[in-house]
Amino acid sequence: MIRRKKPPTISHVAQQAKVSIATVSRVLNGTTPVDDKTAKRVRAAINKLNFVPRHAARVLAGKRTHTIGLLLPEISGAFFQPMLKGIEAGAHDAGYDLLIHSTQIHDPSHRPLGEHNTDGLLVFTNSLDDQELARWHRIKFPVVLLHQTPPDSLNIPVITIENKNGAAMLINHLIEIHGKRRIVFLRGPEGHEDSVWRARGYREALEIHKIKFDHSLIASGGFDDEEAFITIQQMLTNGIDFDAVFAGDDDAAIGAIRALRMAGRVIPGDVAVVGFDDIPFARYLSPALTTVRAPIEEVGREAVRQLARLMNGEQAEALTLMRTELVIRESCGCAPASTISNPLQDELISSTRR
Image 1 (cartoon, rainbow, N blue to C red):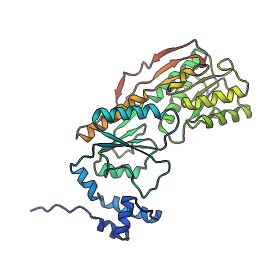
Image 2: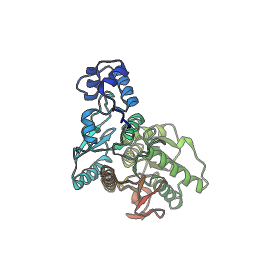
Image 3: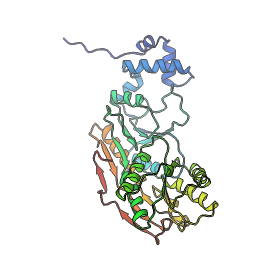
C-alpha cells in the first residue's frame, strides 16, 4: 500500500526557520510586526516546504470565499479609474465580491490578499515579486496578471493591450502626416512593460522611416504629469531641439503641455504633443489630445473573465491582447477628431505576440 505523504505543518515551518510556532503564526496572520530578517526566514521555510496554512487549505479544498482580490502598486492617475470600473463590473457580473490592496507601502511579512481570503487574484504590473508568484503557481492558486508577463517558468495568464503597434501608429502619423523628425519619447516607470513595448513601437517607426535614433530625445515621464512637466522643462533648459513629444501616457502628456506653454511654445504650431490611453479628459484639453485609445475598462472585465475560468477549473488564455486605436485630435496638428483602428489586429487577439 502506498502511503500519501503528509502535508507540512506549522511546526515543520518553525523547525525549518528555527523560530517558535507563535512567530510563524504572526508572520502568517500579520497581526503583530515581525523583524524583517526573521520574516524572510519564515517565508523561505514556507516556500521550501510548500506549506499551506490550514484555513487556506480548507479554501483550496473546496470552501469558496466568493471573493476575488486585486493587487496594485498604487492607485493614482486617471488610468486606474476605468480599469477598476471594469474589474468591479466583471466581478459583480460573475457573482464575486472584490478586495483591493495597494502594495505601495507593503510589509513583506504580511499577505493581505491570497488563498486565505480570496478564490483568485488579479495582479497588476509591479505589484508582487516573482517569488510570491511562484508560490501561488506551485499551490495551483488562480492568478491572472495585468500588463505584466510572468517569469519564463510560470504559466500564468496575462491580459494586456497592443502597446507596440499603437505607439508605432502614433509615430508614423507624426512623421508621415506632419513631417516630424525630432520626436521626444517620455517613457514610463523603469521596468514597466507597457512602457517597454511603447518604446519598441517608437523605435521601429523611426527605423522604417530611416530616422536615426537619438538618445537625447528619450527621457522619463513616469506616467505622471509632474514628472513629465519637470522633464520637458529640463530639456528646454538644456537646449534640446524637438518638434514633437510622444508622452508615454495621457497624464504625462498633460505635464508636457503645461511645460511647453510656460516656455511660450505653441501647441501644435511649435511642438506637437501626443499621448497614450485616451483617458476621459483627453478630449477636453485645449487643444484636444491626439492619443491611442486603449480599452482600459474592457481589460479589467476580461481579466475577471479569465480568472473566473481558472477558478472554475477551466483553461484560460495564456496571453490576451486587446486592440488599440489611433484617435486623431488637434494636438498633433490635425483637424478634429477621427479614429483609426489598428489594421494589424482583430478586436480581441489571443496569441503570444506583443
